[in-house]
Image 1 (cartoon, rainbow, N blue to C red):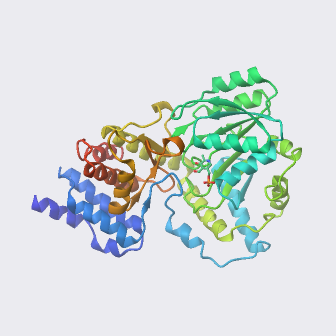
Image 2: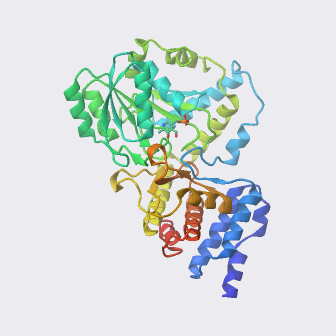
Image 3: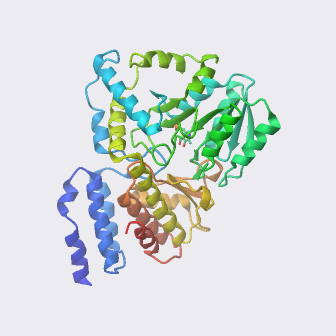
Length: 435
Ligand code: PLP
C-alpha cells in the first residue's frame, strides 16, 4: 500500500502548485486520481487535503454553476489592454474581428451584434424590437427562464399563448403547431432553447423553424445557456433572432449579450416602435461603420474577441462533442450514485446538469462542503426547484479535469453527510467516458 501512495505522489509534480494556472494544477490532481483508481486504492484523506489545498493556494475556485463559468487566463488578460476610443480605427478593427467570429459562432451569414448588457437585456431587446402591444406570441413555458420571457412579452403588451409543461419536461413541436392552428393570427414563436432552471433542452427546435416558416411567423430564441455548447445553426434552423450571453458556454466574463438577426426579422423590426438604447435599427446603422451607437464595455469586447478566437481555433464540432462527453460523464456518475437527473433522457441538456437532492440529505450542505473543502462551486435549484435540486454547469472550458474533480468533490460531500452509496463508483462511472 505504501508504495502505491508513493506512486501517486510521484505522479504529482509539486512545482505545479507554484504555477498560477489553476487548470495546470487541477490536471496534476486528476492524474493522481487516475492512478489511484488504476491501483484500486480507496481515494482517501490524502487526496482530499491535496484538492483542498490546491484550490486554496490558487486562490481560485472551480466555478461549476450554470453561468458565470470558468474563464481562460488569456481571456481575463485581454481585459487589461489599454482603453481605446470607441470611435477609432483600432476599435473598428476589434469590432470587425468580433463580427466575423460571432458569425462563426451563430453559424450565420446574417447580422450579429454584441450589446453591453446581461442576457436578460438581450432577451428584452429581442422582444421590444419585434413585438408590438396586442401581438400574439406562442411560448412554451417549462421553467423559470421561459416564465421570465413570458413576463417580458406581457410587459411589452404582447399576448403570450402558453404551451405548458411541468418543470423537467418539455413541450413538443406538435403542441406548438396545434396552438398556432387553434389560435390563428400569431406574430411569433418565442422559445428558451435550454431551460437553465431544469436542465431541459428543447430538442424539437429544428422542427419549430419549419413550422415558423410555413406559417410566416418570427422565431425568437433565448439560447443564453447553450450557444457555443451544443448545436444551434441559426440560418439552417430558421431562427430569426437568437440571443446569448457572454458568461456561459462562450467562457467569457459576464456583461455582454450577443445576438443574430435574420432578414425576415429586419422587416418586422423596421415596422416596430423601438426603445432608444435597445434600438436595433440604430445598431445596424452604426454596424455599417463598424461601431456601436453607444459606448460599449471595451474590456469585455477584448475578452469576447479572445474567447471567440479560442472557440474558432477549437472548432464548433469538437467543442460540442467535448460538452456532450462531459455531460454524459456527469449523468452516468449521478445515476451510479443513485441520484436522479430531473429531465427525461431525451431532453437532457448537455450544458446544465440538474438532479434531485436525495431524501434526507441537505442540499445546501452538499454545496457548502464542496465549496469550502474542495473549492468546487455548484448551484442550487432555481425558482420552485430551489430546495429540491442541484445544478452543475457543463459549459465553456469544461473538460475531463473539471468534470472528474466536481464528481469527486460531490462524492466526498455526500459521504460526509451520511448518504449511502458505493464510494468511488461515481468517479469510476464518469472516468469510463474519458477512456
Ligand atoms: N435566459 C436563460 C436561459 C438563462 O439561463 C439566463 C441566466 O441564467 C438568462 C436568460 C438571464 O441572463 P442574465 O442573468 O445574464 O441576465
